[in-house]
Amino acid sequence: MSDAAFSLSIPGLTDDEQRTVRGLFTQLQAKRNRNLLRSAYYEGKHALRVASPVVPDHYYKLGIVLGWSAKAVDALAQRTALETVDWPDGDIDSLGLPQLVDANQLRATFKGGQVNSLLHGVSWVVNTVGARDEPSSLIHVKDALSATGTWNARSRRLTDFLSITSLDDEGNPNGIALYLPNLVVQCDKAGGRWSIARSQHRWGIPVEPMAYKPWTREFGASRLTRPLMSLQDRALNALIRLEGHMDVYSFPEFWMLGADSSVFKNPDGSLKPIVQVMLGRIKGIPDDDTAPPELARADVKQFPGNSPTPHLAALNGYAKLFARESGLPDSAMAITDYANPTSADAYAESREDLIADAEGATDDWSVPIRRSVARGLAIQNGLTAVPDEWATMAPRWRSPLFQSRAAQADAGTKVAAAVPDLAATSVGLRLMGLSDEDIRQFQAERRRVNGGSVIDRLRARAGAVNDAGNANGTPQPAGQPQ
Image (cartoon, rainbow, N blue to C red; front, side, top):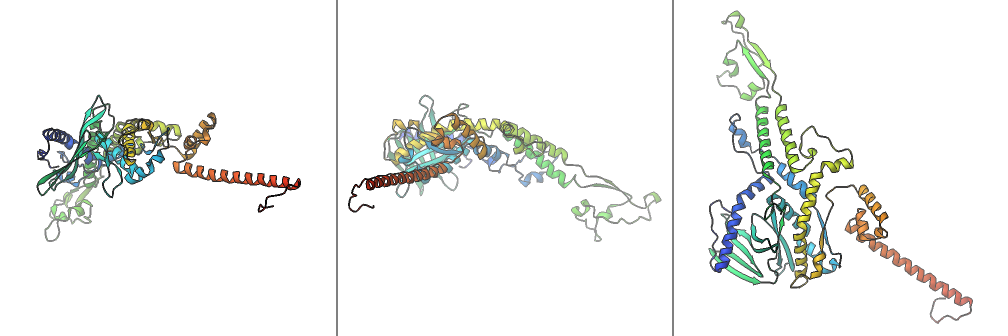
């Protein structure tokens, strides 16, 4: 949306609807600049524009950026991988979960919501009914730049929700969807005129806020905190100073005694290129016969170029401070002076804060994901409400502690040995590191093998009976194999 103040007024809405739209749009604009700033940090589009008094302006025009903010967000997002949704009290696949996952590319959809939640503090999971030529049940995610709502702290639900569905060439909304209890008001602008369509449903407000650290404020808090952004800015300043150092102070410095400025000029009197002078391409300086004897021959003194070590040390210090603030290990950020963990315990300890953050984030995201998936399955199955027995559905997350297959199998084997019959179940096989696809293939092959064994036993038993009958002189039925 454009930076200029823009009041969203739509003819045809009721007074209550117009009041809700204006209030939510004002709320959206109030957070817009800060959300855009964090998006710029994440996308590597934030470059410093404040010039230092000791650094030439053109170094700030180079657009030097750092990817630390994306590292802080993505490192946590990669440890919050959603595997599936389980239903201990029933067969969730029979409800059409695979079809819902495939039709909505659900894992990628939720991963986008997780990243937006970490970046802006909240994202929104929206359930809708598919139109013609669309899947019957749709789940999509809106970020905090294009949607907002009103949270009821007592019911832990949204009371209304505004989604910006399209923008005009100036960045102002020309399409919105207003969600009210059991009602969706779709407004679209074409040819300078607004059209309004209302649709009734029975799902209340079919939107779930997916917030990161929701206990800190109403709609969560961004992982890109002010200290992290400040540290990245200071590191950028260090990089810019390093660029200036490499252009100027890394060259050796020369003092020439007994020579005039003509040595820096071409035969036609024009100055030689600065690069040629800086690189020391002046190979010969003529004697001055008219000068006093002590100055007749030029004397060149060289001072070595300054080392960039202080700049690199400052950058390395900022990197470690950034790593500490974001819960990342030094090896993820620092340039030098860090050690890789040498054991599994050391590895886990170096990432303890990051793992704790990942576990906390998945706990906070489990409820909105469970609600949205259950609602999506109900819509897909033509229901008008989510059955009470579906309340036991729960997302299953991959462990945030990255383990090798061997370590995971060893730990699972020890657990299975302590619990009888666990190894034969899906839970036990999962503890040993098998994926859901591996488990399904194993169980299918086991059924085929066991089925073949049963048939072989029945055939053997029938053969034994026939042999006994023949030995006793019992006649066999006609048509039966002898």
